[in-house]
Image (cartoon, rainbow, N blue to C red; front, side, top):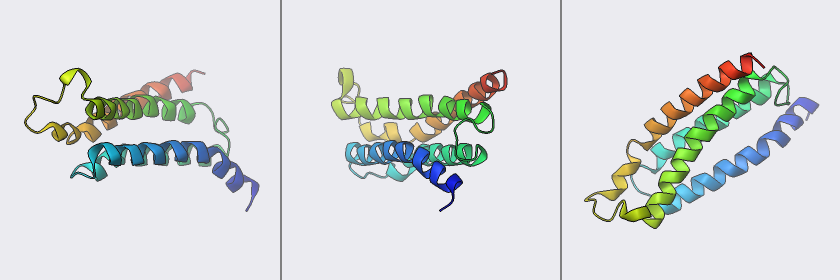
Length: 133
């Protein structure tokens, strides 16, 4: 294994562990459910962006400038944050948000779309900020 691949793997490992933990937690909250695979898509996009960022940087976060690292962080914060928050709210029935609903698990039906759009906006903002750094 060359230095570049080893650096990518070492820097990718914490992100991969967070993604695996989030995916396991999503599966536990949704109890399998029909929308589980759909809700894992933003996590896969985050993993892809992270791999691309590290690859372009030669195994370093800022090896190719700050556009991709800040853009990736800009994607991760709203996409992962929104998804984690709604899964948490569903798991504890935050403020009786889901107790009166006829189909409470349908909150997960369009959640991936919302998180991808929010993440895309965050990525664009991070890309612009990274250009000026």
